[in-house]
Image 1 (cartoon, rainbow, N blue to C red):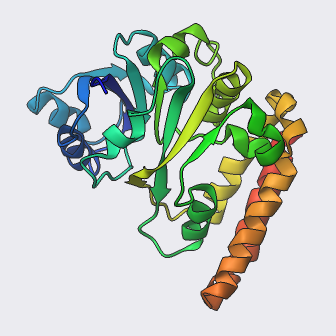
Image 2 (image 1 turned 180 degrees about the vertical axis):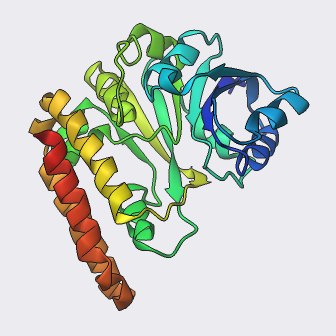
Length: 283
């Protein structure tokens, strides 16, 4: 296999606790040519910019009101001349030197044109089970023919650690110049699948992506997600409600399997924050 050239696109905001470890882990990646680091720094109050300047790392700085989950990424991808554009977030932890190779090795511009990594958490909270449900230990290749099998999960895709063939991203017009507040990854995954391409979930391309969200933060995230589904109501036909119910059942099953009954104090409030947030966002 010829070595693919890759551009890394990563939005940064008050990222001083992440940037050094993240950048060093990217420099250690093997068997892939990283052509450009395309960091986009939203103005903040820490010393992220100082680190980037001192280490002569390429970045573009924007004002807070300029940031958009979709448009910020789209701009960098449209300017890329690498074979593959890789989207990551500042808080992923990469420990495997073959993470990037395993993510992009099967991407071509004919069949599999996008891929996303397995995400694990370092916290032993409810997120452990959501990660298990969404990121199993086996590879999955999803296409239009799999919609009946997977429903909405056919379009599950996470740009916390993902890759898209650059030519295909451009040919599909990225995010259509839309300012999406969340779920821009599902938006592009839908376009990829419905245009006859395939997406690969790469279980051997692993990152750690860990959170300790408050109930308010969960509610706010799902309110935005509900707003996204309202604006893109064509996705409802694939079972948005069923997907949430399936996750809730899986988490409850795993709590009892591992006898971690203390999590039952959190579980109903966590699920309620998701459900209510989604309902309010959809109004």
